[in-house]
Image (tube, rainbow, N blue to C red):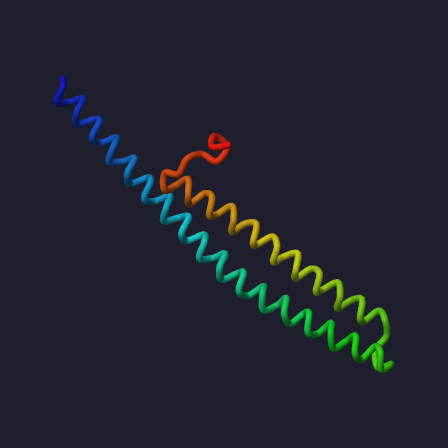
Amino acid sequence: VAKSDGRQALAVYGQTVLDAFAEVESQLDAAMVLDRRRNFVEQSSKAAKETLRLAEIQYKAGDVDLLDVLTFRQRSFQADRTLLSIERQQYEARIALYLALGGADIAEAS
């Protein structure tokens, strides 16, 4: 009976270790995806800001109307909002990775 219990405990432990590795790997993959998304959105945000800057110059010169400037401003704000959302997701992913690596539950630490 003791040998059977020992084998069962070893099997449970082995599965727990495999599950932990899988969770860490999943969190690392998610972090990499978010990093790529953030880089793309940062470039989009910079491009939107530059487009807005040029539109404002053209508006002052009388080459475009106010509606165009407001449209570009809205696109710039949307890109910034998307970037902030991705940054929030990155923080959440880092917390999940910390917990997957065995870190103390943040709610308990407070």
